[in-house]
Amino acid sequence: MDWRRALHAVAETRHSLRPAERRTGGRSLVAGANALFRAAEAERPPASRILADGYAARFAERHPLVQAIRVGRFVAPPLARELARLQVAHCTRHRALDALVAEALAEGFTQVVTLGAGYDTRPLRIGGPARWFEVDVPETAALKRRRLPESPATAIEADLIVDGLPLAGTGFDADAPACFVLEGLVHYLPAATLDALLATMGAGPRRRVLLSFIDPAMVPRASVAFTSLVKVVREAPRQYLTPEALAEHAAPAGLRLTGHWPFAAQVAAFAPGARGRAVGVSQDVARLDRP
Ligand SMILES: C[S@@+](CC[C@H](N)C(=O)[O-])C[C@H]1O[C@@H](n2cnc3c(N)ncnc32)[C@H](O)[C@@H]1O
Image (cartoon, rainbow, N blue to C red):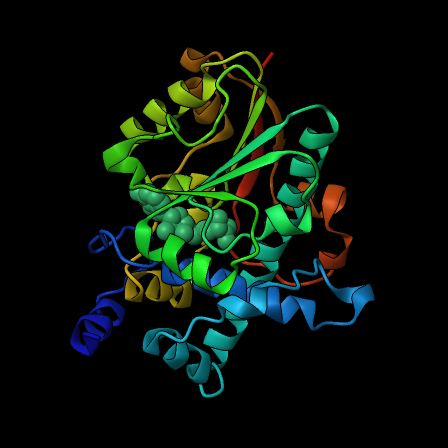
């Protein structure tokens, strides 16, 4: 690992979410951190937890940078505070998307395609008769296959920026209803890639897209601890959207905004366990439909 690069990222951090540079390829450390958040949440008493993901602990990220951050929280209270808030933000939106995916299945969607799936374990936790597909970069997909061999999902290894959404030949039925899930992904993508993906996802008989995104209003709310963290792991956000901008991006693909939940609405509608817990930056959740 390049410690000098990590120290430089912290040193140059200003109160900004703009990335100093972008990581290309490689396993996502944020996906591993999210799994750690879900594993920690699962250990809370049932009455006060946001969700319970019994598989998340299998993805405990052992990368030295993540280990250093975990140890760092014992000596740096602002870091400990930020990690606790990020756990609440992540688990709340994950719980919201759990509920929205379950709703889509109940409404007759027979295929679920998760883009940037990371270590999401919904195919095992939600299951049902649907066919599940998961797209991620080869390094993340390979680790997931090793640690979750019983997953019923079809893994599709692809870089969405380079390859688009390569569904041909995977068993995906273009004539059947499909629900697409993009959680914690949109801010990794250039706007042109998002538009191209929306066009692919919107093409078909009955289509739903469930996604999370970062509203630009979050930028001034980001703490120095947060900006340092995402820069150190080289996964700083590169795209922000208002709900109105999201609706504009979706319209050419025939997709209409049918639901939007900022953090407080996620808590109210889906995640009562998050009530009263502190949060910092968070992602909004939205639903797009092609009727
Ligand atoms: C922040 S993680 C979110 C993972 C998971 N959806 C969650 O919410 O815990 C972002 C995921 O998107 C994947 N990703 C980012 N850019 C990608 C790209 N260009 N092509 C495919 N996957 C990508 C990363 O590998 C990572 O697994």
